[in-house]
Amino acid sequence: VIQVVNTSANTTAWGLRKPGSTDARNTSAFGNCQNWGYIGVDSNLTFQGYIGGTGIQFKLLGYFTSDGVFFTSAYTKTPGTYGSWVSVNCSTEIPAGAKFAIVEITGSTSNPVGLRPPGSTDNRTAAISSHAFALVGLDANRTFEFYRYANSGSPALHLVGYLTSGVSKTNGADVSLTSTGAYVNIDRSGDADSAGATAVLVERCPGWGSYALRKNGSTDDFYKNEYHAWGVVGLDSNKIFQGKISTTTV
Image (cartoon, rainbow, N blue to C red; front, side, top):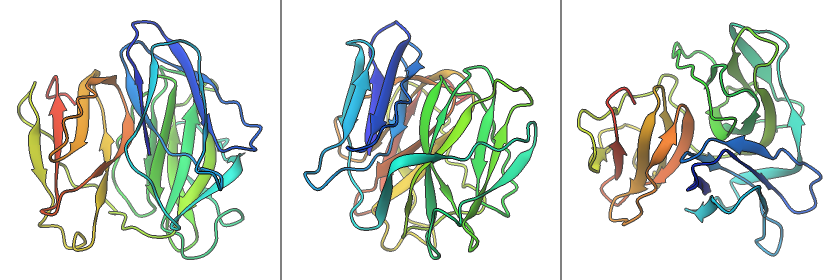
C-alpha cells in the first residue's frame, strides 16, 4: 500500500508495476498532489516504480498478505459506454469468492470518474489528477460499477488484482469532517463489520483541497491536494483513524 506524494509544484509522471510486468502507465500527477497505489511484489518483496521528476515520493504504508493477489500485467477493462454507471465484469480474471477488485485509472484530468459495488446508490463522481489506484467491492458474479464522463477522452480502467478478504459497504458511510487544518479522530468502532478490521477503505471526494489520512498514533503528515482518491488507512485497537482537510468541501 503506497502513498504517492508529489512534493513539487510541477506536474510529474509516476508509475507502479509488479516485477516482470511490461506495463508502463506512467501518467502525471498535478503539483502538490497525492494519491494511492496498490501494487504486487515478487518473491523478493520487490515492486517497481517510475518517477518523471524528483518531486515524486513513494511512502510504504502497509501491505496485504495472501489475501492480496496481483497480476503480473494488468487487464484493460475500460467500458465503451460514457455518461452513466456501467457494470464491469471481471469473472474471467478473478475467481469466485473474491471481495474487492484492485484497479488503476489513468487519463484525462478534467473528466469525472466513479467506482461503486453493484447495488449501491452512491453517486460520487469527480476527476482525478490523471492517475489513481483504487479498491472497489465485488458482487458474487465478480462485477463492480464504473462511471466515466460522456467524453471519448475519459480515463481508462485497468484491473491490477483482487482481494480475497474484506468487507465492502454497499453504500459508503459518510465520515466527513466539519473542522479544518488539524487532525481529527474518526471512530468506526460502531460498525457491525469492524470486529476484526485492521484498516478501512476511504474514498476522498469531491472538491479540490488538501487532505490527509493516517493511523491513529502516527506522526505522518502527507497533506496534499486531490479531487478524488481511494485510500486504505490503518485502524488502532479502538478502530480509530485520523483525517485532516483544508476545506469542508472535501
